[in-house]
Length: 97
Image 1 (cartoon, one colour):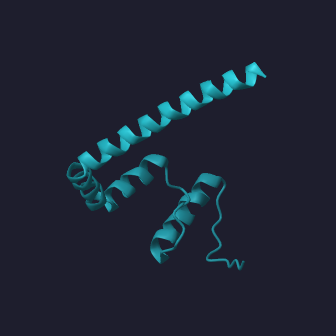
Image 2: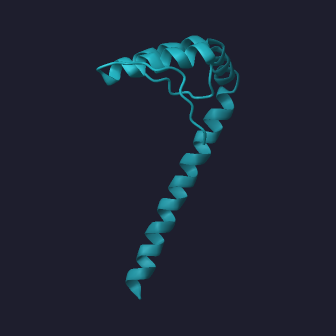
Image 3: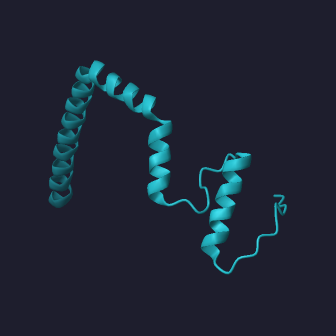
């Protein structure tokens, strides 16, 4: 990994250093999702702003495929019930020995 000094930034507090780092990351762009000096609230707002179309697409997809989702949930419920029955049988067999 290679590190290089972008600028010599003198400060007394780490928060100021993190904010400056975040400003530089925004200016030059990066693959890093975690921008220093940004609060969770700011991160969430930026994510929502950048992913409005994804949210709408997910909503449309869920509405179109509601029947599929319900069927899958029924299958999961049936499988869980079967697993519970098998566990009860297994316990009975174990205790009989």
